[in-house]
Image: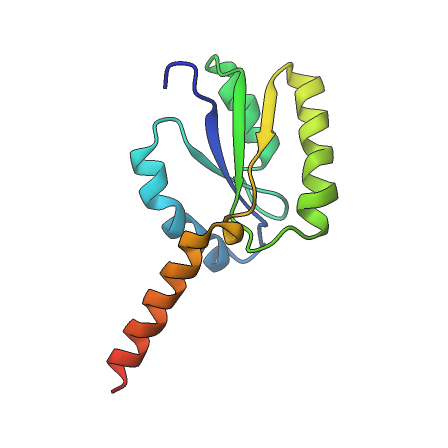
Length: 124
């Protein structure tokens, strides 16, 4: 990783384990191909952002980049998550940057189109 920040894939979280499993499967290819990447949940599930950052600090990581698995930036990404980041930076002495939500990436629109085409092909 040589100086690159540790990637945290951030999902909202749910008390329903099936919901979390969906995001863990979605994150799987990234977690397998990007060394040191982790999934974290904003609330209602573990590991939390605090847990992932704490474990990273214990293993010597000083910089993190949060990639939100959100379709758009609403209240959580505009207010709640930046507040969490500020607290984590203060309490752990680390640097944390917040990427744009995954839904703002045009590649996701292309992937959705591919899924829709596959569904249409299955039903024709």
